[in-house]
Length: 93
Image (cartoon, rainbow, N blue to C red; front, side):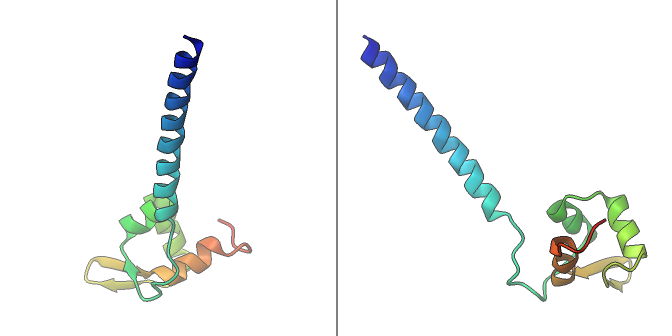
């Protein structure tokens, strides 16, 4: 009977590990890609992608930390410029 309990525990343990691995795989798949240098992002996408608040984004934008384009009321930021800022070890904010 102990072997049945132990096999059940092993199965549960393996299911937990597989679930964790699937979550890790999903997280790795959502890391910023550097192969899209000409991709423009909207502020909402920037905040979500880099984990900052809209207020922080607006302060950085006003501070001239990265260039942006404004078309009408819409603001667009080049992804490559953001990655340089957020992933450069010399940069802090």
